[in-house]
Image (cartoon, rainbow, N blue to C red; front, side, top):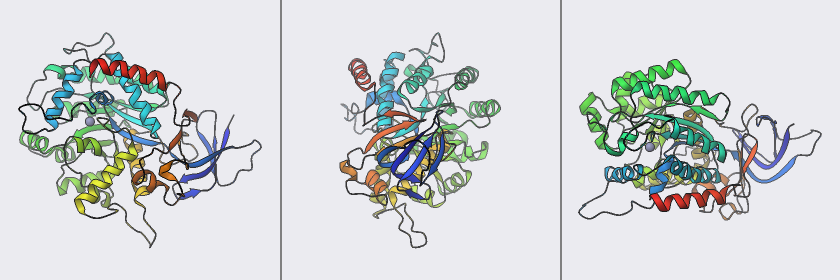
Length: 462
Ligand SMILES: [Zn+2]
């Protein structure tokens, strides 16, 4: 049984259909998209703007528990930085149970859906009990996140993370023990999780290396090679070049800057996601752009941690692929992250519309370019979710409300500018994942229970 939706304005790769008709099969896959409908049964009419669901390519759900709780400078500390923030994060990690992680992730995933994200990459490195002992089920934490995504209705690419060391040549200690695997134990975990995918078309398992600080070259190469044997299409994510200190530490130890080392030692290609990549030299930037790898930008987290600004304009002009993550969850809105990204560069370069380039005399709208780029980069980094509402793709659809303050009076030409760079009210009204309405009128069926459970947990652990 198929359902046909008549959407007032439907976003397509080559422009808007007004109206557009989307026929969705019982399996949640789009059968047809057209500007006219001549079928037998009535179409369901939907007012507003229909766009593909957004992609979030980098998240640590549990870090939401720290948001708003690290914005101070402690006694005796002259300045604050990422490494101090990390100590606060470790203190939190020491306290979290699997139930806590599930309760926090549920609220985070709910919010993501309410802001229009339908596909998430979760970079999951909290694996073990305090002290480092395995849970009875070594995949416990990862499976809790899979269960949460399934319950809330979010498409998930889970990236269990390989983490071996507290720093280059530094043994792991304290809270870090909850992250650590041998490469063999790690690959067993990946294999276990991959078995969960066969009955779940919304789930993919990829590989993640925490960083070249926490994984040695040998460990990294062994893990990547084994993953390529298990699944040649699996995505591979890594934190890289987030701070100047990290670049210097890696350069001292390995004789190459982090991205330079990857370029020299692995087949850096479209399957890879370089998370942050804030501090690249010109050669790394040009070669990374050419490689097809996605740069995973997390603008608000990078701002909150004082990391620096990615060379977005140069990378975009070099046709580099990039997408957006919400990382430490100081925002769960991709639209807000895109606004911070564009505005950070405007402040730095003292120009407007820094990423847009007019072609053939046509207006180039920043909102549309930011939206399209983030969608394409996110789909590449997650290995799922569509860059367009098109036949053969899952029906992951976001409906924007034309009656929301942010969009009042806007038509197709400027609606993405208004959403991403305009007002502050969230215009996402309804969200469909694989043909199923998950958010209706801004609400999720389990919202009250999710919020109550989060509050109970956060009052205890934060
Ligand atoms: Zn991260």
